[in-house]
Length: 327
Image (cartoon, rainbow, N blue to C red):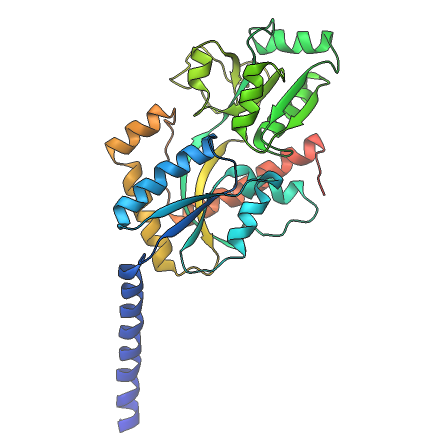
């Protein structure tokens, strides 16, 4: 054996050790300055509420500030693209809802970001659906009565959503197609303004996230007719699912954290570990339950990535079936 052949394995081993040390150092050092958590919706909606909870959780766990930056507009595209085009150092992250990543690619002819190529999935947070709400004085108490009423008043009723092509928009379009309804869509920049106008009677109906609407349902300020998730929710056990009501809907929503695609894996794994740890913490779980979230899957980045890829297929099929397309 030559001297050169003896040196080569030693050199390779040293390089490997340095690489491992560098990875460990990067993971230990992160974060050493404030982290921005971009939310592509207006403040006060369900996405913003959960994002602020986890900004606080991550800030305490990693001993650094996580600052929420609301960037609403264009059905979430503005905020999502801002992160996609940002630095891949872990200091600009995305907290978003399923539609921005799983629906928009099928909805828009030209999208400035690719949810698979431009992002590294970090962790899924929650899973479920949305409530079909109507203004309190609309004389209906079930989807069956709602369908009959809308048919008796064709093109006279309006419904709101948090943007064209959003989960609420597609859910109502699916119901309209199945039931043969004609209604006017009124898009908003977030679910909060949509629900406010629903309470005020400016619009007649709309799907909205459950986290910010349970209490107004209980108080009678709006009426819930159905839930688009896979099963009834404990907070409103008398509200049936859309599928139970005869109008199947199997495309579920979630919240999730993403980083730009080239973010170091050590940072992605550390963020995932802290989020998963939080989702097992009784204090956080109780707070999520208070916000009406009871389905909390624990996912690795790889598992969340698989969920995203499957949802791209499922939501894409729904978009095509209802014929919605945007420029």
